[in-house]
Amino acid sequence: VLLLVLLADAAAFKFLTDFGPAKLIPRPSAMLKRRRATKKFGDKKLAVITGASSGAGLEAAANLLRTGEYHVFGAVRDLDKMRDAALDRDFPADDFTPLQVELGSFASVRALCRELERSKLNRPIDRLICNAAVYQPGEAPAWSADGHEMTLQVNYLSHFLMASLLLPGMAKSADPRVILAGGASAEESVEVYPRADLGALQGLKLGAKNPISMFDGYNFDGAKAYKDSKLCLAMLSHTLHQNYHKQTGIAFSTVYPGAIADSAMLAGKPPLDTSAKLPSFVKAMVEFELNAMRRIGFGQDMHADGLTGEAEAVSTAQAGGRLLQAAHDVRCSKSGHWAWKEGDAAAEAAAAAVAITGGDAGADRARAQWASIYEVEPSFDLEMSQELWRHSSRVTGASWAPANQPKSPCPTLVVVGAITKANNAKEDAKRTLEGLEEDGKGGFKVRAAVIGGTGTVVDAVVGNTLGRVGKLAQEAVLGAVPVEAIEGSFQETKERGAAEAGAAAGAATLDELGQKIEDTLLAGELQARAELASKRGP
Image 1: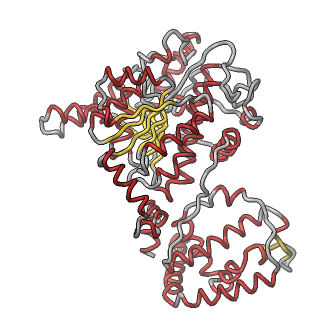
Image 2: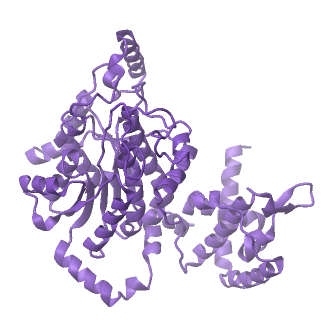
């Protein structure tokens, strides 16, 4: 049981996933690449930032380089602008590599990822910071090279595709993080208009191509398209964590660095929040509701954004510092949705942090700047998140690795893997009548041929009692059934005779595992029964 608990940790799964002959005996070509990478990068981590030529992206790149612990790849549209900015900020040439990408083109995104593969010399990317964004508030949408509305493609779809291409290599890093720069839409708790709302994804389901500009299928609204794109990033972060964190060890985060007052993206454009046009009595109602919530202990860090004027804008430098924190702070080495307190709440957090530094001025400043971070608990429709994932994959042509459990010669995992395979086949087969047969009691049961030899043996040997324990162990160790298993279609299988032959072979294998595994599972069953009895009471 202790072994199963230990293996539930993402680091253990990551180790088993990465483990193989190449770890023990590296190929000569791999050894040569490793030497070249060490010569070029030393022991620095590799960070990729989109939109690094200006704004918060430029500040984040400068901050990462200032630590001396990163080699930064700046993925930008305008290379000349990036080179000029790097010179102005005295970026160390040996630690910074500018790369060109046009996020309005999926072909350009794929070309960037190929160039990264060459440039990183077999080193894994440790940080992917998806920061680039555009805001197109015009009356009519602008269309990308692929025919999608520009805001949604640049801010979301292209980063979606980029993540799918870079994720396999990032899994080899010791501390990989994917950071998606979100917006206020990911945590809006009051009616701030226009609201981020994906509807039923009707527009995306139809391909979200010209003339369909919005994912919800309705008419174009530039501010809403921007907010929708940021909501999509937050939902993507959540789905990536569910599907891949356990087996890759990658931390997936969405960050909202704040409303940037001096953002070049918003210069000369209408505000994202059009609530200022609402009558004063509406603003008063919102403020009244917030005050009522605060009196009962909720919403202490909430504000009414543009409705009440309480929101405090942050500078580009502050936003860049917050992106650095998400990439560098050990607190952000786990998946999450991160935001920062403002106003009095931030001042109180900073004062509390300074109180424990012992008078070190440098430590005081660092703690004060980073003390206001907190984790947001957004509420997502999980079914909607999976729909967004599926249709975004179709639209972008993204291909994702299956969320499989790593294989190991460990006997316990052999049994857990067999139970997993059988239970997944059963759950999948229940979704289609072709996978069922009459059970003789007026109902249906899963056909043995669907489960296969291993599943038949598991049912026969483990049975009703140990099978339930195995299912509990499977859920604790492996998590939920992967998307592929939930949505897989029924496939024709071999005849029953072949299944029975496989069952006989599987039985011999299970017998060799010995009595220890059965005793372990039985002990778990007894413990589960005892806990159930205690909950039911006398």
